[in-house]
Image (cartoon, rainbow, N blue to C red):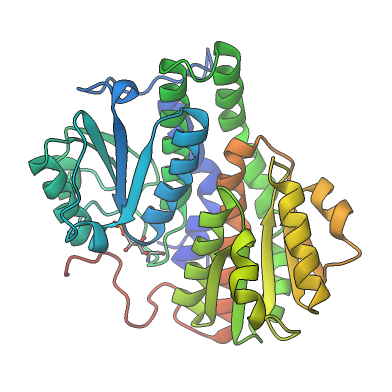
Length: 364
Ligand code: M6R
């Protein structure tokens, strides 16, 4: 049941500290803080390339992972949505590994992409939530997310546990490739182990996000902006808003703004900017200034540093805890989910069963 929550989606958002913790504990030894992924029947660290394929929210988890595998592990990554990848007859590299991410493990396009990669001689790894699913069965190795059953059509806890699993994997591969030293590996593991506690702190901003949802619910269009690993989070935020509140939203790379979408900005379009303190912080700050100069209504989601820097310019802000940039995508997912949730509730839509959508898309 819903355990007293009004919707499954809200219950599942609130379960995140618990299920992220379960996922962390299954991949990081709580005593030693060592990351111990299950042994794979192939050597991912020595793969020539990783190809990631998924759909929807799972695809955005894969996009975040691309930043981790490339930046942290120096492993080249190719990524695409399954419905495009599967028909392109892409040439696949020698000694390549292909990674499929799926909550249900039954998404048809993802499954067919997996079968294509198998025929092309790739080793098949998947990150799946539903045990005994078809994608799990047809993979050479499976890493399970410990989200438990996800009922709400909008994916929430599956996403953050996918990210958690992928961060553990990327860190281990980075270390095996000699791209990070013991100390950095330990610090990533420690940061991941702290995520459940930080996630609980983020959930404490629920009331504030509910107030801000009142502003969002008035809008016809919403823009989400981010850079680096926050770019996929911006797209995830826009997807969540579209699918449950039916408000048109776009997720954009902040640096791409001036190549077109800045023309949309006026004082009727809320612009939600995700800006943790990382190496791209100053770049996003100047993008926020560009938006403000065109009387854009900015909602800033940032830590203390970002809010101090921009408070005189932006209309609203939500303060998240400062964190290792590696774990920022996991924590920044939560306000994005809550904003979509409260906006949908205000609009009176069917949050758990949005129109035209199915939980698991087993048709082409
Ligand atoms: O079960 P899967 O993870 O393969 O599903 C993929 C997408 O259908 C799914 O993430 C969809 O985009 C969600 N409704 C997003 O909230």
